Image (cartoon, rainbow, N blue to C red; front, side):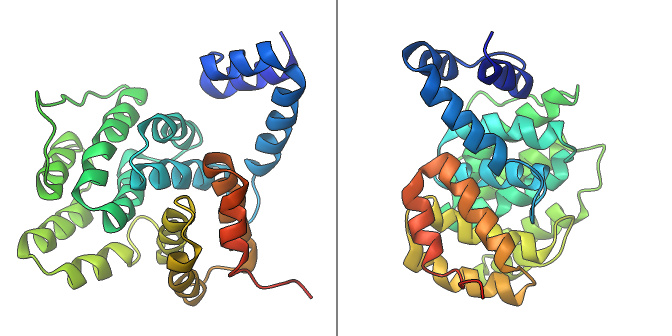
Length: 239
């Protein structure tokens, strides 16, 4: 087996079909891609677990289940708890609304499964974010869900500004990380203009230029080189 195939087998416990096919058609392309991915996913300004969780969340925000689930596994494997992962997915909700949290149920149940816990899926997934969050809280019955219950109460109150403010405050995750996540949600959909204000808010929340560059790099992995074009427009040049 090639080093590239070994790498992906270590990451995913098996060689994904898309990786095998890339190797079959061009081992050189897979080697190049693996080198780029391996470099980007190392600990940097952002840690490996943060990068996986951010990619999972950004894919929930653009309603792309496949990559969301791949990186959910990485986030759990590298140390995140399911309640922490849920906070990432709340930023997906801020970006795409009810549909993002509905999709994130797949990731939350998968994360629990990876940790040897059960999460019984309803016959029909909830359409509303309030119902999705109620289900998640029920799944996390052995965990401290105080923060999630606060968010649920605010969602039920209907005050969107209060919901956004509380989701973006420090919880199990830092406000800095959540603002970086929101910027990335726009970048993976190639909306650099929309990301601009969130990049500024991320800086105010404590994000460095290196943090923002890491967001650009991980966005390349899930949305291609154009994602870097969009992020780089707001990135300050080094002196």
